[in-house]
Length: 130
Image 1 (tube, rainbow, N blue to C red):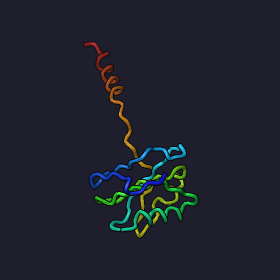
Image 2: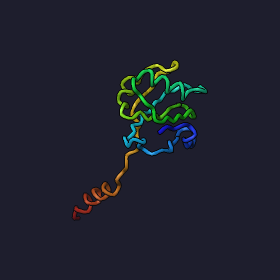
Image 3: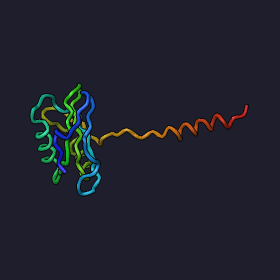
Image 4: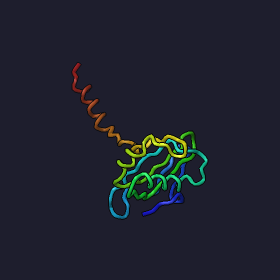
């Protein structure tokens, strides 16, 4: 499972989506890492970032990388498999092409179960008798 930038569906300057499944071909759930603080206007950024990451973390296989260079804060989402924690601990706050990177787990929006919250709130008020 290898993904290139041609597989990335880009939206506006601040958002992008990776057009892929959340599992690689071996069936192992892919762990995605967010990398912020990337330099702007580097034509070979994807290759440079992959090469640098693989030189810093032994045995790292990157199954996909999606880079968003638009907006104020260029960043990437990188599928690092089971080595995501090592990638975070080794690369967070490290310098890449003169920029200090923020490396952390991808933050995904949590599903909000409004029905259970609303039911609890409604019960709180409905149980009071006036």
